Length: 60
Image (cartoon, rainbow, N blue to C red; front, side, top):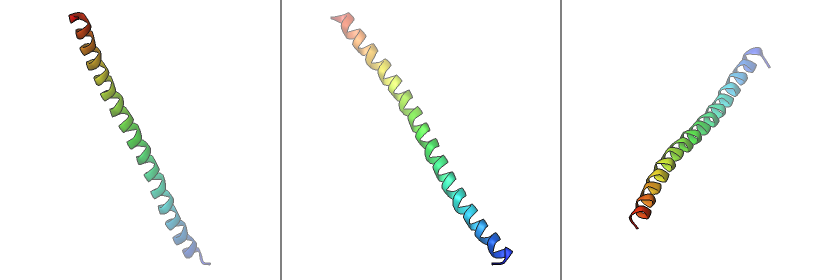
């Protein structure tokens, strides 16, 4: 094979590998972002529930 053919094959492989790597990185970043949002919402819900339960126990 000529050097040009190998260069084309390497370029195609580089694009395919880069596509896969970028897809994996964005999937991981989306998962981490989702996890952070869930953690924030969970803390807010926990604080709200705790304040509601605390009020009810003081009233009773």
